[in-house]
Every structure is written in structure tokens, then in C-alpha cells.
Length: 370
Ligand SMILES: *Cc1c(COP(=O)(O)O)cnc(C)c1O
Image 1: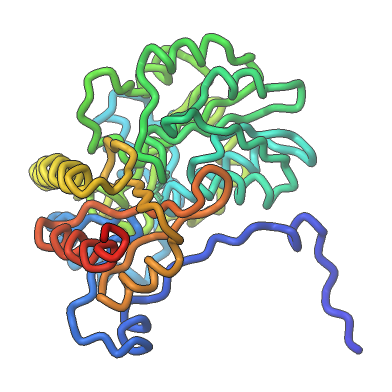
Image 2: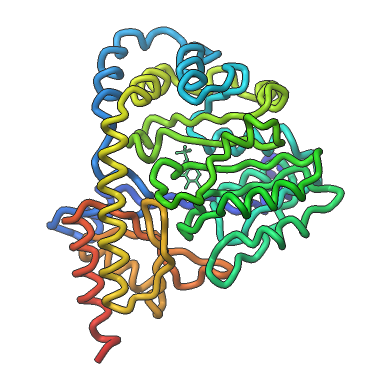
């Protein structure tokens, strides 16, 4: 028998990110006639920023050229917008690219990265892919980051902490006071990556803008993305802010053309499209309140969220419920693993989409209530 190529055990053992099936494939397999609504990936229900779309159309004839490998104009615009120097900004092929770069640049074999157990799956994956050791710290009972436990989990091998704020899939957030208390406890040789993918959606006044911590010279890198509020998940554009030194370290291992020309053009235009972001934010705030209220009225257990999704816990096996919803043309994201068994994440959609989700849940959960 032919032996295949040898790969390291840590690669063989890695958890894999499982993407959902394409909508068209679900429709074909299940013979669904209704319009399918996808509330599985926290995408913007209003679509892409119109200014970004227009800019990409105009850029199409330039696509025989390589992208600007330094991302000059987009980095410059981001730097100006957020009042930090260009040399403190890095671009990514989505912010997940930056999550991976951070792991690659900071972890040698066996080094540790600390994150919350109920947080973004990309952290353990990025850490495992470089043979680092992920330390998943259980969340609090109300599904928030347990920052005291996370600080206590930092040991001599810890080089990195990931904090999603707000967190995915829980929708909970760390407050300014909690963040300060945590950062004060972190050794200088540890980098804290604060992933603010949903930053623009958050309403409460005690939610921290960690760019202030970057400006204050704390050992923090802040990640943002064009995927969510700007509706550009398909183009892959993310960015991050840190000290000049940290950005230089990441540039050591960044792939030279990691962000495409269209992504750079789209990001540049999206930054100018504040009316779009404001509209998406306002709609999300209204629909988030609607969903919280309607879930509450139905006594469907859920975690109060400040983002564009809600973690629900309908009190039954989640996999069959997911499949039954799918048959009704409603796609959600079932969760699993420690602390998240029989939970599912639902993206906040338009009012019509949210009503369809609630009606489908009513149909399916009615039997439980008799
Ligand atoms: C959606 C999301 C991102 C964004 O990923 P992109 O690669 O920028 O599309 C990052 N972090 C978290 C926690 C997310 O949920």
C-alpha cells in the first residue's frame, strides 16, 4: 500500500472549521420551494455597502494587476479615520487572517494562548495550527468571559490571550471596568488580542473601545472587519491596530498579497459609507430588541446579546431542531461543545426574516408546550 505524505500529529489532530452548506444545495436536497432565509453566519441582512459595490464595479478593469501588497491607501484611510499612525495598522484577508497571523507570529511549539471556552472557534484552530496549546477557560454562568479565571490561567508559557468583544456565539460583552482590571493584571510579554468584529453594533455605554488601549501603549491588538456592519463578508477584508512593533512582527509572516485589490477598494469605499453603517446599526438595534422580546414572550431561553445574533437554548436536542427548521427554509447555526450543548446561534435578520424564524420555532416547539 502506498503511504501518503507524512504530516505532524498536531495537524492530523486539528479541529476543522465546518462551514454550512451552500443555500442552493440545501434547497436542491430538500426540494424546498419557499425562499430560504440564512440566519447562520451573522451576515448583514441588508446586503453590501452600496458605495463599496460601486467602487468594486469601477475597479474590475484593473484586475490584471497585483494588489498593492502594502495596502497603502486603505491603511492610510483607516489610520486617519481612527487617529493612529499607518504603521500601526495591518490588513487581513478577513480578520480571521489576522487571528491566524497573531498565532503564527507569537507562538512557538507548546506556547500557550488563553481564550474563553464559549468564544470564537477560530482561536483554538489558529493556535492548534502552529502547534500551540489552547487554554480554554470556562465562561461564567451568564455566558460572559470569566476574566479573573483567564488572568489566573496565564502561566510562564502564555504568549497570547484572545478576547472576542462582544463574543461570538454568546453575544455578551466585557465592560470598560472589567477590561481595565484584566489588562492591569497581564504580564508585559503577553499580547491581548481584542476581536471587535461586532464593535459597530454595540449600544451600551460601558462597552470599551479598545483602540484607546492601543493608543495608551498597552500590549493590545484590536481587530475589526468589513464583514459584518459593512456587509462585505464575501470579499474578505479585515484590519487591526497595535503598536508599531507588533504590526512589524505580524508583517514578518504576512503573505505579501493577503488582501485582494477588490477587497482594498471595497474597504476604502465602505469607510466613506457611514450612512450605510448607521442604517444597518439602527435596524439591528430595533430587530435585536424585537427578537429578545419575542423569544422572551415564548419563554425560549436565550442569552441577552449586544451584537447582530442571539444564542438560544430551546431546551431540546438541537440537531433535529436545526434540521426541521432547515426543512422549513430557515437556516440557523447549531452549537455544541462544553457549555454550548443544545444551543444555537441565530442571526438578527430583517423583520420579515425574524418573523419567519419565530413562526417556524412556534410550529416546531408547540408540541413541547402541550
Ligand atoms: C465574524 C467574526 C469575525 C470576522 O471574520 P472575517 O474573517 O473578518 O470575516 C471575526 N471574529 C469574530 C468573533 C467573528 O464572529
